[in-house]
Length: 496
Image (cartoon, rainbow, N blue to C red; front, side, top):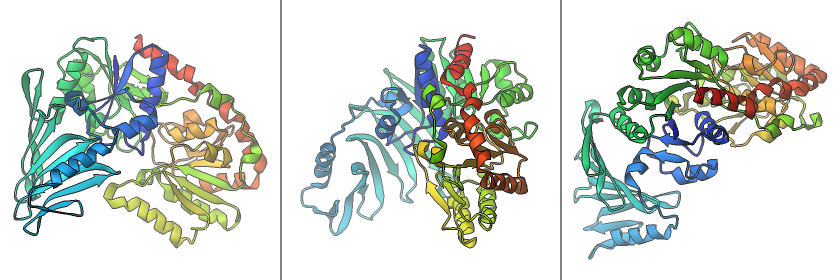
């Protein structure tokens, strides 16, 4: 079995987790058994797995030890609620049990399912909180008088404690994890941190399978665990974004990646995988290894590459940007350019597809929306939010625009080109130069050059024939990202 390691799969699925799902299909094709490993608890696991069509293909650390018998029927929740609220002599009101005019039990729902139950003492302090996952009590949290978490206990199907997380007080009343206990197979293990627990979990998976390949798609989740493993297994780190702080090949290596050179030298890490060959070459040089591979994080199906998109479906002046609303994407460059263009090309529109980055209380998203409002551009610049499927959007757009400071691959560019959509992008590390055939399927312009961006988009608006030319070459330009081509690279790595 081969394992793709991440944090968790969310309903608003990130590009990393989508890349893992596509990789599963490739490994299936190569007859190399594989599964996705998630290390964080996820209450949405069933819904996400169904949405991504990976039911039975995901192993979660907590679920692995708990083995809970989940109930799809929400009627089981009502039975639990009835049992917990019906205390002799207590009142029931608004999903609460009340004693002496004080709430002692409180029910909390999530997505129409029982989420957690609070148990309060006579002074109103929450003593404990029982969490439920599809009708099963999954873990309990206990609190001290300042509301600080003291211990979290995870249960198995028999209600026995499998995992205990112990906390002690830190600065600002913030709980600090100090001990993890695991009861499994008649033994008890103790760990000082989650990296040690994850290493134990990985060791247990590869004990009888030394040929297993472990692929880390989230360095903050797996790298430290790799260093602590005691069992042999091939271990790779995937760079989904640039490995330097500034995205430049000679820039400062990001702190989380700094141990990699030593890990490679000591055998704690087998090799590195980058989404582009350009980054793989840079990583080979910076980390002093010959085991650095360039393998795309995604692919285009034969159907996508052969699909004919009528040019008359494209809407004149319709530009799109597919990116989360974060600072690194520099979406303000596109907004400023489009508002300038609108003075001369009133038909121009811009639709921005992507979820809002929560960093710093959504500061970037707020700033971008304020910019659009300030420019009085709300009639033709729209924030469309996150969408699972953008096929129709790509087929209607005149061009997709990318202005990021840096990228790991720029998956949206590939998707756009696969659907016949020309692309205009800053020539940055990494991805655009390997996806766009310059002046054939789109244009590469100097990084951060907003004047060059303006001139490029102006040409497209003034010359529909140029858009048609680029659109006619997009699919041919990305043939190297076909399923078979990407599968061939994975086969080479697996059989290395």
